[in-house]
Length: 598
Image 1 (cartoon, rainbow, N blue to C red):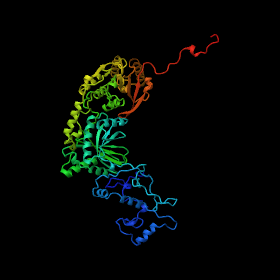
Image 2: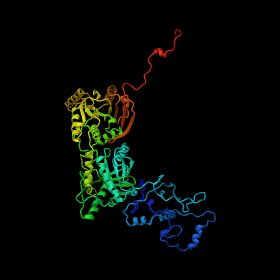
Image 3: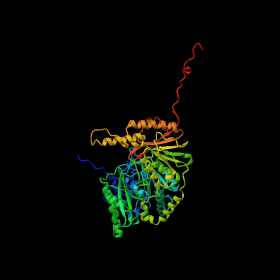
Image 4: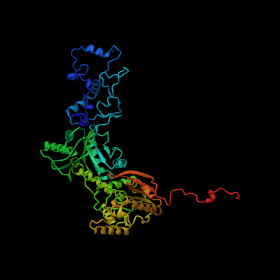
Protein backbone atom coordinates (compact mmCIF):
# COMPACT_ATOMS: atom_id res chain seq x y z
CA UNK A 1 0.00 0.00 0.00
CA UNK A 2 1.65 3.27 -1.04
CA UNK A 3 2.28 5.83 1.66
CA UNK A 4 0.52 9.13 1.13
CA UNK A 5 2.90 12.08 0.95
CA UNK A 6 2.38 14.83 3.53
CA UNK A 7 -0.13 17.43 2.44
CA UNK A 8 1.65 20.71 1.80
CA UNK A 9 -0.11 24.07 1.51
CA UNK A 10 -0.42 25.65 -1.91
CA UNK A 11 1.81 28.71 -1.86
CA UNK A 12 0.87 31.99 -3.49
CA UNK A 13 3.50 33.28 -5.91
CA UNK A 14 2.64 36.88 -5.03
CA UNK A 15 2.92 36.85 -1.24
CA UNK A 16 4.61 33.58 -0.37
CA UNK A 17 1.67 32.67 1.88
CA UNK A 18 -0.10 29.31 2.02
CA UNK A 19 -3.32 28.99 0.07
CA UNK A 20 -5.34 29.22 3.29
CA UNK A 21 -3.92 32.71 3.77
CA UNK A 22 -4.96 34.07 0.35
CA UNK A 23 -7.94 36.30 -0.26
CA UNK A 24 -9.73 34.30 -2.96
CA UNK A 25 -9.79 31.06 -1.02
CA UNK A 26 -13.16 29.78 0.24
CA UNK A 27 -14.51 26.36 1.23
CA UNK A 28 -15.37 24.22 -1.79
CA UNK A 29 -19.01 23.91 -0.73
CA UNK A 30 -19.38 27.71 -0.89
CA UNK A 31 -18.08 28.15 -4.39
CA UNK A 32 -20.33 28.77 -7.41
CA UNK A 33 -19.46 28.04 -11.05
CA UNK A 34 -17.95 30.66 -13.30
CA UNK A 35 -16.37 32.58 -10.41
CA UNK A 36 -19.69 33.51 -8.71
CA UNK A 37 -20.43 33.20 -5.01
CA UNK A 38 -23.38 30.99 -3.75
CA UNK A 39 -25.83 33.87 -4.23
CA UNK A 40 -24.91 34.40 -7.85
CA UNK A 41 -22.90 37.59 -7.31
CA UNK A 42 -20.14 38.32 -9.75
CA UNK A 43 -16.99 39.50 -7.96
CA UNK A 44 -16.51 42.04 -10.75
CA UNK A 45 -19.62 43.91 -9.59
CA UNK A 46 -22.28 42.55 -11.97
CA UNK A 47 -25.80 41.75 -10.79
CA UNK A 48 -26.94 38.11 -10.47
CA UNK A 49 -28.37 36.75 -13.70
CA UNK A 50 -31.98 35.50 -13.94
CA UNK A 51 -33.04 37.09 -10.63
CA UNK A 52 -34.37 40.43 -9.55
CA UNK A 53 -31.70 42.23 -7.49
CA UNK A 54 -34.32 43.89 -5.24
CA UNK A 55 -36.09 40.60 -4.57
CA UNK A 56 -32.78 38.99 -3.84
CA UNK A 57 -31.84 41.71 -1.37
CA UNK A 58 -35.21 41.43 0.36
CA UNK A 59 -34.90 37.66 0.63
CA UNK A 60 -31.54 38.06 2.33
CA UNK A 61 -32.87 40.68 4.75
CA UNK A 62 -36.14 38.94 5.79
CA UNK A 63 -36.20 35.84 7.96
CA UNK A 64 -37.21 32.56 6.34
CA UNK A 65 -40.26 30.45 7.09
CA UNK A 66 -38.64 28.81 10.05
CA UNK A 67 -37.72 32.10 11.64
CA UNK A 68 -34.01 31.67 10.90
CA UNK A 69 -32.25 34.52 9.20
CA UNK A 70 -30.04 33.36 6.36
CA UNK A 71 -26.43 34.05 7.19
CA UNK A 72 -23.55 35.03 5.00
CA UNK A 73 -21.33 32.35 3.64
CA UNK A 74 -17.70 31.93 4.51
CA UNK A 75 -16.67 33.25 1.10
CA UNK A 76 -18.63 36.45 1.76
CA UNK A 77 -16.96 36.81 5.14
CA UNK A 78 -13.47 36.53 3.68
CA UNK A 79 -14.29 38.76 0.72
CA UNK A 80 -15.91 41.51 2.77
CA UNK A 81 -13.02 41.46 5.20
CA UNK A 82 -10.45 41.78 2.45
CA UNK A 83 -12.40 44.60 0.83
CA UNK A 84 -11.71 46.63 3.98
CA UNK A 85 -7.96 46.34 3.45
CA UNK A 86 -6.16 49.37 2.05
CA UNK A 87 -6.35 49.22 -1.72
CA UNK A 88 -2.79 50.46 -2.06
CA UNK A 89 -1.31 47.44 -0.27
CA UNK A 90 -3.30 44.92 -2.31
CA UNK A 91 -2.59 46.62 -5.62
CA UNK A 92 1.08 46.99 -4.75
CA UNK A 93 1.36 43.26 -4.06
CA UNK A 94 -0.31 42.51 -7.39
CA UNK A 95 1.99 44.85 -9.29
CA UNK A 96 5.17 43.62 -7.62
CA UNK A 97 4.94 39.86 -6.84
CA UNK A 98 8.45 39.73 -5.39
CA UNK A 99 7.66 42.23 -2.69
CA UNK A 100 7.17 40.66 0.71
CA UNK A 101 3.84 41.00 2.46
CA UNK A 102 3.90 43.08 5.60
CA UNK A 103 0.59 42.29 7.20
CA UNK A 104 1.11 41.52 10.88
CA UNK A 105 -1.16 39.67 13.24
CA UNK A 106 -2.96 40.61 16.42
CA UNK A 107 -4.72 38.58 19.08
CA UNK A 108 -7.14 36.42 17.13
CA UNK A 109 -10.29 34.41 17.66
CA UNK A 110 -9.35 30.76 17.14
CA UNK A 111 -12.82 29.71 15.98
CA UNK A 112 -13.00 28.50 12.38
CA UNK A 113 -15.97 29.28 10.07
CA UNK A 114 -18.57 26.58 9.62
CA UNK A 115 -18.16 24.25 6.65
CA UNK A 116 -21.89 24.56 5.77
CA UNK A 117 -22.89 27.33 3.36
CA UNK A 118 -25.19 28.90 5.88
CA UNK A 119 -22.67 28.77 8.67
CA UNK A 120 -25.39 28.57 11.37
CA UNK A 121 -25.01 26.55 14.55
CA UNK A 122 -27.42 24.06 16.07
CA UNK A 123 -29.20 26.68 18.13
CA UNK A 124 -30.29 28.49 14.98
CA UNK A 125 -28.41 31.70 15.81
CA UNK A 126 -25.95 32.79 13.13
CA UNK A 127 -22.36 32.00 13.98
CA UNK A 128 -20.28 35.18 14.17
CA UNK A 129 -17.68 35.62 11.47
CA UNK A 130 -14.08 35.33 12.65
CA UNK A 131 -12.12 38.48 13.23
CA UNK A 132 -9.89 39.93 10.56
CA UNK A 133 -6.69 38.64 12.12
CA UNK A 134 -8.00 35.13 12.90
CA UNK A 135 -6.64 32.01 11.23
CA UNK A 136 -8.16 31.31 7.84
CA UNK A 137 -9.10 27.89 6.48
CA UNK A 138 -6.18 25.46 6.14
CA UNK A 139 -3.88 27.71 8.18
CA UNK A 140 -2.04 26.49 11.25
CA UNK A 141 -4.29 26.46 14.31
CA UNK A 142 -2.59 28.53 17.00
CA UNK A 143 -3.99 30.57 19.80
CA UNK A 144 -2.46 33.57 18.05
CA UNK A 145 -1.71 33.52 14.34
CA UNK A 146 2.07 33.42 13.96
CA UNK A 147 3.98 35.99 12.00
CA UNK A 148 4.88 34.18 8.78
CA UNK A 149 8.25 34.38 7.12
CA UNK A 150 6.97 36.85 4.55
CA UNK A 151 5.98 39.25 7.37
CA UNK A 152 9.41 39.49 8.96
CA UNK A 153 11.50 42.60 8.38
CA UNK A 154 15.23 42.61 7.76
CA UNK A 155 17.14 41.75 10.93
CA UNK A 156 20.32 40.21 12.29
CA UNK A 157 20.47 36.74 13.78
CA UNK A 158 23.25 35.77 16.21
CA UNK A 159 23.68 32.03 16.71
CA UNK A 160 25.06 30.56 19.92
CA UNK A 161 25.19 27.20 21.75
CA UNK A 162 22.04 26.05 23.52
CA UNK A 163 21.77 27.43 27.03
CA UNK A 164 23.65 30.66 26.23
CA UNK A 165 20.75 32.60 24.66
CA UNK A 166 19.96 34.76 27.71
CA UNK A 167 23.63 35.52 28.29
CA UNK A 168 24.03 36.53 24.64
CA UNK A 169 20.97 38.78 24.82
CA UNK A 170 22.44 40.55 27.85
CA UNK A 171 25.75 41.00 26.05
CA UNK A 172 24.06 42.36 22.91
CA UNK A 173 22.12 44.94 24.95
CA UNK A 174 25.36 46.07 26.56
CA UNK A 175 27.04 46.46 23.14
CA UNK A 176 24.18 48.06 21.20
CA UNK A 177 22.29 49.98 23.85
CA UNK A 178 18.59 50.21 24.54
CA UNK A 179 17.56 51.38 21.04
CA UNK A 180 18.00 47.94 19.45
CA UNK A 181 15.18 45.40 19.64
CA UNK A 182 16.52 42.06 20.88
CA UNK A 183 14.49 38.86 21.03
CA UNK A 184 15.67 35.48 22.28
CA UNK A 185 15.02 32.30 20.34
CA UNK A 186 16.24 28.75 20.44
CA UNK A 187 19.91 28.66 19.53
CA UNK A 188 20.40 32.42 19.21
CA UNK A 189 18.93 35.90 19.35
CA UNK A 190 17.34 38.25 16.82
CA UNK A 191 18.35 41.92 16.59
CA UNK A 192 16.09 44.44 14.84
CA UNK A 193 16.56 48.12 14.15
CA UNK A 194 14.38 50.65 16.01
CA UNK A 195 10.78 50.36 14.86
CA UNK A 196 10.28 54.13 14.59
CA UNK A 197 13.20 54.58 12.18
CA UNK A 198 12.76 55.10 8.44
CA UNK A 199 13.75 52.25 6.07
CA UNK A 200 17.04 53.91 5.14
CA UNK A 201 17.83 54.52 8.81
CA UNK A 202 17.06 50.87 9.61
CA UNK A 203 19.53 49.67 7.00
CA UNK A 204 22.17 52.00 8.39
CA UNK A 205 21.44 50.81 11.93
CA UNK A 206 21.75 47.15 10.91
CA UNK A 207 25.10 47.83 9.25
CA UNK A 208 26.33 49.50 12.43
CA UNK A 209 24.98 46.64 14.58
CA UNK A 210 26.69 44.03 12.39
CA UNK A 211 30.07 45.76 12.71
CA UNK A 212 29.80 46.26 16.46
CA UNK A 213 28.62 42.72 17.20
CA UNK A 214 31.33 41.10 15.09
CA UNK A 215 33.94 43.16 16.88
CA UNK A 216 32.67 42.98 20.46
CA UNK A 217 30.62 39.79 20.93
CA UNK A 218 32.33 36.97 22.84
CA UNK A 219 29.36 34.59 22.98
CA UNK A 220 27.95 34.61 19.42
CA UNK A 221 29.03 32.00 16.88
CA UNK A 222 28.11 34.07 13.81
CA UNK A 223 26.34 37.31 12.88
CA UNK A 224 23.85 36.61 10.06
CA UNK A 225 21.89 39.22 8.06
CA UNK A 226 18.41 38.07 7.06
CA UNK A 227 17.77 39.16 3.46
CA UNK A 228 14.79 37.06 2.27
CA UNK A 229 12.02 34.91 3.73
CA UNK A 230 9.28 32.85 2.12
CA UNK A 231 6.89 29.97 2.68
CA UNK A 232 8.03 27.09 0.48
CA UNK A 233 6.91 23.66 -0.67
CA UNK A 234 9.62 22.55 -3.14
CA UNK A 235 12.99 23.60 -4.56
CA UNK A 236 11.49 25.98 -7.12
CA UNK A 237 10.23 28.15 -4.25
CA UNK A 238 13.78 28.27 -2.92
CA UNK A 239 14.91 29.61 -6.30
CA UNK A 240 12.17 32.28 -6.23
CA UNK A 241 13.23 33.19 -2.70
CA UNK A 242 16.83 33.83 -3.75
CA UNK A 243 15.80 35.72 -6.91
CA UNK A 244 13.86 38.23 -4.80
CA UNK A 245 17.19 39.79 -3.72
CA UNK A 246 19.16 42.22 -5.86
CA UNK A 247 22.55 40.53 -5.52
CA UNK A 248 24.35 43.26 -7.43
CA UNK A 249 23.91 45.35 -4.26
CA UNK A 250 26.00 42.79 -2.35
CA UNK A 251 28.71 41.47 -4.69
CA UNK A 252 30.15 41.79 -8.18
CA UNK A 253 30.85 38.95 -10.64
CA UNK A 254 34.48 39.04 -9.49
CA UNK A 255 33.46 37.93 -5.98
CA UNK A 256 33.07 34.30 -4.92
CA UNK A 257 30.22 32.72 -3.00
CA UNK A 258 29.28 29.66 -0.99
CA UNK A 259 25.87 28.38 0.17
CA UNK A 260 25.26 26.30 3.31
CA UNK A 261 21.85 24.76 4.01
CA UNK A 262 20.59 24.06 7.53
CA UNK A 263 17.34 22.19 8.17
CA UNK A 264 14.96 21.46 11.01
CA UNK A 265 12.02 19.23 10.04
CA UNK A 266 12.24 20.17 6.37
CA UNK A 267 10.31 17.96 3.91
CA UNK A 268 12.85 18.42 1.10
CA UNK A 269 14.78 15.31 0.19
CA UNK A 270 18.13 16.98 -0.58
CA UNK A 271 19.56 20.00 1.19
CA UNK A 272 22.45 20.07 -1.26
CA UNK A 273 20.01 20.57 -4.13
CA UNK A 274 18.27 23.37 -2.20
CA UNK A 275 21.61 25.10 -1.74
CA UNK A 276 22.33 24.59 -5.44
CA UNK A 277 19.09 26.36 -6.33
CA UNK A 278 20.19 29.35 -4.24
CA UNK A 279 23.53 29.40 -6.05
CA UNK A 280 21.75 29.26 -9.42
CA UNK A 281 19.52 32.17 -8.45
CA UNK A 282 22.46 34.36 -7.43
CA UNK A 283 24.38 33.56 -10.62
CA UNK A 284 21.33 34.10 -12.85
CA UNK A 285 20.56 37.43 -11.20
CA UNK A 286 24.09 38.77 -11.72
CA UNK A 287 24.28 37.38 -15.27
CA UNK A 288 21.07 39.22 -16.21
CA UNK A 289 22.27 42.46 -14.64
CA UNK A 290 25.96 42.46 -15.61
CA UNK A 291 26.43 39.76 -18.22
CA UNK A 292 28.79 37.79 -15.97
CA UNK A 293 28.40 35.34 -13.11
CA UNK A 294 30.42 34.84 -9.91
CA UNK A 295 32.45 31.76 -9.07
CA UNK A 296 32.07 29.33 -6.18
CA UNK A 297 34.71 29.06 -3.44
CA UNK A 298 33.90 26.57 -0.68
CA UNK A 299 36.90 27.50 1.51
CA UNK A 300 37.28 31.29 1.58
CA UNK A 301 34.24 32.85 -0.14
CA UNK A 302 33.58 36.57 -0.32
CA UNK A 303 29.83 36.03 0.13
CA UNK A 304 28.67 33.30 2.47
CA UNK A 305 24.96 32.44 2.35
CA UNK A 306 23.07 30.35 4.90
CA UNK A 307 19.72 28.83 3.92
CA UNK A 308 17.57 27.81 6.89
CA UNK A 309 14.58 25.52 6.33
CA UNK A 310 11.92 24.37 8.75
CA UNK A 311 8.63 22.63 8.03
CA UNK A 312 7.06 25.74 6.43
CA UNK A 313 9.45 28.70 6.14
CA UNK A 314 12.67 29.22 4.19
CA UNK A 315 14.99 31.98 5.39
CA UNK A 316 18.08 33.20 3.55
CA UNK A 317 20.92 34.86 5.48
CA UNK A 318 24.12 36.64 4.49
CA UNK A 319 27.01 35.64 6.75
CA UNK A 320 28.77 38.84 7.83
CA UNK A 321 31.34 37.03 9.99
CA UNK A 322 33.10 34.68 7.60
CA UNK A 323 34.93 32.28 9.87
CA UNK A 324 33.17 31.41 13.11
CA UNK A 325 33.60 34.04 15.81
CA UNK A 326 35.23 31.63 18.26
CA UNK A 327 38.32 31.88 16.04
CA UNK A 328 39.82 34.95 17.66
CA UNK A 329 43.08 34.81 15.73
CA UNK A 330 45.47 33.94 18.56
CA UNK A 331 45.06 30.17 19.00
CA UNK A 332 47.73 28.22 17.13
CA UNK A 333 48.89 25.69 19.72
CA UNK A 334 46.19 23.29 20.90
CA UNK A 335 46.09 20.17 23.00
CA UNK A 336 43.62 17.30 23.14
CA UNK A 337 39.94 18.38 22.88
CA UNK A 338 40.48 22.14 23.28
CA UNK A 339 37.70 24.30 24.67
CA UNK A 340 36.16 26.82 22.28
CA UNK A 341 36.67 30.46 23.15
CA UNK A 342 32.94 31.17 23.00
CA UNK A 343 32.23 28.44 25.55
CA UNK A 344 34.96 29.72 27.87
CA UNK A 345 33.46 33.21 27.63
CA UNK A 346 30.01 31.74 28.38
CA UNK A 347 31.37 30.08 31.53
CA UNK A 348 32.79 33.42 32.70
CA UNK A 349 29.52 35.19 31.85
CA UNK A 350 27.46 32.62 33.76
CA UNK A 351 29.70 33.18 36.78
CA UNK A 352 29.31 36.97 36.28
CA UNK A 353 33.08 37.37 36.36
CA UNK A 354 34.05 40.58 34.57
CA UNK A 355 37.44 41.33 36.05
CA UNK A 356 36.12 43.83 38.58
CA UNK A 357 37.85 44.17 41.96
CA UNK A 358 34.80 42.72 43.69
CA UNK A 359 34.97 39.63 41.44
CA UNK A 360 38.29 38.53 42.91
CA UNK A 361 41.18 36.68 41.30
CA UNK A 362 40.72 33.86 38.81
CA UNK A 363 42.57 30.53 38.79
CA UNK A 364 42.44 27.72 36.23
CA UNK A 365 44.48 24.84 37.71
CA UNK A 366 44.16 22.71 34.54
CA UNK A 367 44.35 25.38 31.84
CA UNK A 368 45.34 23.19 28.88
CA UNK A 369 45.93 25.54 25.93
CA UNK A 370 44.94 28.49 28.12
CA UNK A 371 41.50 29.27 26.70
CA UNK A 372 39.80 30.23 29.98
CA UNK A 373 42.60 32.39 31.48
CA UNK A 374 43.22 34.14 28.13
CA UNK A 375 39.53 34.97 27.74
CA UNK A 376 39.45 36.16 31.35
CA UNK A 377 42.51 38.34 30.82
CA UNK A 378 41.04 39.96 27.72
CA UNK A 379 37.79 40.64 29.58
CA UNK A 380 39.69 42.15 32.50
CA UNK A 381 41.74 44.33 30.11
CA UNK A 382 38.76 45.40 27.98
CA UNK A 383 40.23 43.88 24.79
CA UNK A 384 37.66 43.36 22.04
CA UNK A 385 37.71 39.73 20.82
CA UNK A 386 37.60 40.65 17.11
CA UNK A 387 40.56 43.02 16.96
CA UNK A 388 43.01 40.42 15.62
CA UNK A 389 40.97 38.97 12.74
CA UNK A 390 39.17 39.88 9.51
CA UNK A 391 35.45 39.59 8.76
CA UNK A 392 33.45 38.77 5.65
CA UNK A 393 31.47 42.03 5.69
CA UNK A 394 34.66 43.96 4.90
CA UNK A 395 34.48 42.57 1.33
CA UNK A 396 30.75 43.14 0.76
CA UNK A 397 29.42 46.13 -1.19
CA UNK A 398 26.94 47.48 1.42
CA UNK A 399 29.82 48.00 3.87
CA UNK A 400 32.41 49.53 1.51
CA UNK A 401 31.14 53.05 2.06
CA UNK A 402 31.33 52.49 5.84
CA UNK A 403 34.87 51.13 6.16
CA UNK A 404 35.98 54.44 7.68
CA UNK A 405 33.39 53.93 10.43
CA UNK A 406 34.72 50.39 10.88
CA UNK A 407 38.25 51.70 11.42
CA UNK A 408 36.97 54.21 13.96
CA UNK A 409 35.22 51.42 15.87
CA UNK A 410 38.44 49.41 16.00
CA UNK A 411 40.46 52.41 17.15
CA UNK A 412 37.93 53.18 19.88
CA UNK A 413 38.21 49.55 21.04
CA UNK A 414 42.02 49.87 21.23
CA UNK A 415 41.71 53.09 23.24
CA UNK A 416 39.53 51.33 25.84
CA UNK A 417 42.19 48.79 26.78
CA UNK A 418 43.65 48.97 30.29
CA UNK A 419 45.66 46.79 32.67
CA UNK A 420 43.62 44.27 34.69
CA UNK A 421 42.45 45.13 38.17
CA UNK A 422 42.60 41.56 39.49
CA UNK A 423 45.30 38.86 39.21
CA UNK A 424 44.84 35.84 36.92
CA UNK A 425 46.57 32.50 37.57
CA UNK A 426 46.79 29.43 35.39
CA UNK A 427 48.78 26.24 35.17
CA UNK A 428 48.85 22.61 34.19
CA UNK A 429 50.61 19.45 35.32
CA UNK A 430 52.03 18.93 31.81
CA UNK A 431 54.93 21.13 30.72
CA UNK A 432 53.77 20.85 27.11
CA UNK A 433 50.34 22.34 27.85
CA UNK A 434 51.79 25.16 29.94
CA UNK A 435 54.08 26.03 27.04
CA UNK A 436 51.13 26.01 24.61
CA UNK A 437 49.12 28.30 26.90
CA UNK A 438 52.02 30.71 27.31
CA UNK A 439 52.52 31.10 23.57
CA UNK A 440 48.80 31.56 22.95
CA UNK A 441 48.64 34.24 25.64
CA UNK A 442 51.58 36.02 24.03
CA UNK A 443 49.76 36.15 20.66
CA UNK A 444 46.60 37.36 22.41
CA UNK A 445 48.52 40.24 24.01
CA UNK A 446 47.89 39.23 27.64
CA UNK A 447 51.00 37.20 28.47
CA UNK A 448 52.20 39.74 31.04
CA UNK A 449 48.87 39.64 32.87
CA UNK A 450 48.67 35.86 33.50
CA UNK A 451 50.88 33.97 35.95
CA UNK A 452 51.51 30.50 34.45
CA UNK A 453 52.91 27.72 36.61
CA UNK A 454 53.45 24.03 35.88
CA UNK A 455 52.00 22.36 38.96
CA UNK A 456 49.73 19.55 40.03
CA UNK A 457 46.15 20.69 40.69
CA UNK A 458 46.06 18.42 43.78
CA UNK A 459 49.08 20.13 45.32
CA UNK A 460 48.89 23.77 44.19
CA UNK A 461 48.64 26.14 47.17
CA UNK A 462 46.19 29.03 47.28
CA UNK A 463 47.65 32.12 45.53
CA UNK A 464 45.57 34.74 47.35
CA UNK A 465 42.87 35.08 49.95
CA UNK A 466 39.74 35.14 47.76
CA UNK A 467 38.89 34.33 44.17
CA UNK A 468 37.21 32.08 41.60
CA UNK A 469 38.30 28.61 40.50
CA UNK A 470 37.14 27.77 36.98
CA UNK A 471 38.16 24.88 34.77
CA UNK A 472 37.03 22.15 32.43
CA UNK A 473 38.25 18.86 33.96
CA UNK A 474 40.75 17.10 31.69
CA UNK A 475 41.69 13.44 31.73
CA UNK A 476 44.72 11.19 31.59
CA UNK A 477 48.08 12.93 31.39
CA UNK A 478 46.93 16.34 32.59
CA UNK A 479 45.49 15.21 35.95
CA UNK A 480 48.06 12.56 36.91
CA UNK A 481 51.00 13.46 39.08
CA UNK A 482 54.24 14.08 37.27
CA UNK A 483 55.72 10.70 38.19
CA UNK A 484 52.64 8.76 37.07
CA UNK A 485 52.68 10.59 33.75
CA UNK A 486 56.13 9.28 33.03
CA UNK A 487 55.01 5.82 34.09
CA UNK A 488 52.02 6.07 31.76
CA UNK A 489 54.18 7.03 28.81
CA UNK A 490 56.63 4.23 29.65
CA UNK A 491 53.82 1.67 29.86
CA UNK A 492 52.40 2.85 26.57
CA UNK A 493 55.76 2.60 24.80
CA UNK A 494 56.37 -0.87 26.21
CA UNK A 495 52.95 -2.01 25.05
CA UNK A 496 53.63 -0.67 21.57
CA UNK A 497 56.78 -2.80 21.42
CA UNK A 498 54.67 -5.96 21.56
CA UNK A 499 53.53 -5.23 17.95
CA UNK A 500 49.98 -6.48 18.20
CA UNK A 501 50.30 -8.90 21.11
CA UNK A 502 47.53 -8.98 23.71
CA UNK A 503 49.17 -6.74 26.24
CA UNK A 504 47.50 -4.06 28.39
CA UNK A 505 48.09 -0.49 27.27
CA UNK A 506 47.99 2.64 29.40
CA UNK A 507 47.21 5.74 27.39
CA UNK A 508 47.45 9.23 28.76
CA UNK A 509 44.62 10.67 26.66
CA UNK A 510 41.19 11.85 27.71
CA UNK A 511 39.34 8.87 26.27
CA UNK A 512 41.10 6.34 28.53
CA UNK A 513 40.29 8.02 31.83
CA UNK A 514 38.27 5.44 33.79
CA UNK A 515 35.41 6.14 36.17
CA UNK A 516 37.21 4.90 39.25
CA UNK A 517 40.23 7.07 38.46
CA UNK A 518 37.97 10.10 37.96
CA UNK A 519 36.20 9.49 41.26
CA UNK A 520 39.53 9.26 43.07
CA UNK A 521 40.80 12.44 41.43
CA UNK A 522 37.70 14.49 42.25
CA UNK A 523 37.59 13.27 45.85
CA UNK A 524 41.21 14.28 46.34
CA UNK A 525 40.58 17.59 44.57
CA UNK A 526 37.63 18.52 46.79
CA UNK A 527 39.59 17.58 49.91
CA UNK A 528 42.48 19.77 48.76
CA UNK A 529 40.14 22.69 48.04
CA UNK A 530 38.52 22.46 51.47
CA UNK A 531 41.92 22.71 53.13
CA UNK A 532 43.57 25.30 50.89
CA UNK A 533 40.76 27.34 49.28
CA UNK A 534 38.11 28.18 51.90
CA UNK A 535 36.11 31.24 50.89
CA UNK A 536 36.66 30.63 47.16
CA UNK A 537 34.01 29.79 44.57
CA UNK A 538 34.59 26.90 42.17
CA UNK A 539 32.94 26.53 38.73
CA UNK A 540 33.37 23.19 36.94
CA UNK A 541 32.05 22.29 33.49
CA UNK A 542 31.38 18.57 33.17
CA UNK A 543 29.07 16.21 31.26
CA UNK A 544 28.82 14.03 34.39
CA UNK A 545 25.59 14.87 36.19
CA UNK A 546 26.85 13.03 39.29
CA UNK A 547 29.93 15.19 39.69
CA UNK A 548 28.75 16.75 43.01
CA UNK A 549 28.37 13.25 44.48
CA UNK A 550 31.82 12.28 43.24
CA UNK A 551 33.31 15.40 44.86
CA UNK A 552 31.17 15.00 47.99
CA UNK A 553 30.12 18.63 47.67
CA UNK A 554 26.73 20.26 47.38
CA UNK A 555 26.40 22.51 44.36
CA UNK A 556 24.76 25.88 44.86
CA UNK A 557 23.91 26.32 41.18
CA UNK A 558 24.00 24.40 37.91
CA UNK A 559 23.77 25.89 34.40
CA UNK A 560 22.97 23.88 31.27
CA UNK A 561 25.60 24.31 28.55
CA UNK A 562 26.58 22.39 25.43
CA UNK A 563 30.19 21.66 24.57
CA UNK A 564 29.55 21.00 20.89
CA UNK A 565 26.97 18.19 20.80
CA UNK A 566 27.70 17.14 24.40
CA UNK A 567 25.23 18.29 27.02
CA UNK A 568 27.08 19.54 30.10
CA UNK A 569 26.44 21.27 33.39
CA UNK A 570 28.36 24.16 34.84
CA UNK A 571 28.40 23.45 38.58
CA UNK A 572 29.07 26.07 41.22
CA UNK A 573 30.52 25.08 44.58
CA UNK A 574 30.96 27.47 47.51
CA UNK A 575 34.04 26.17 49.30
CA UNK A 576 34.24 26.17 53.08
CA UNK A 577 36.72 24.59 55.44
CA UNK A 578 35.71 21.15 56.76
CA UNK A 579 32.18 19.85 56.25
CA UNK A 580 28.82 21.58 55.92
CA UNK A 581 27.01 18.75 57.72
CA UNK A 582 25.88 19.50 61.30
CA UNK A 583 27.96 17.66 63.81
CA UNK A 584 26.18 15.09 65.99
CA UNK A 585 26.58 15.35 69.77
CA UNK A 586 29.23 12.92 71.10
CA UNK A 587 28.63 13.51 74.82
CA UNK A 588 27.02 10.44 76.42
CA UNK A 589 26.26 12.34 79.65
CA UNK A 590 24.14 14.89 77.80
CA UNK A 591 22.25 12.19 75.94
CA UNK A 592 21.56 9.90 78.98
CA UNK A 593 18.85 10.68 81.57
CA UNK A 594 20.01 11.60 85.10
CA UNK A 595 20.36 8.68 87.50
CA UNK A 596 18.60 8.32 90.87
CA UNK A 597 21.87 8.87 92.73
CA UNK A 598 22.23 12.26 91.14
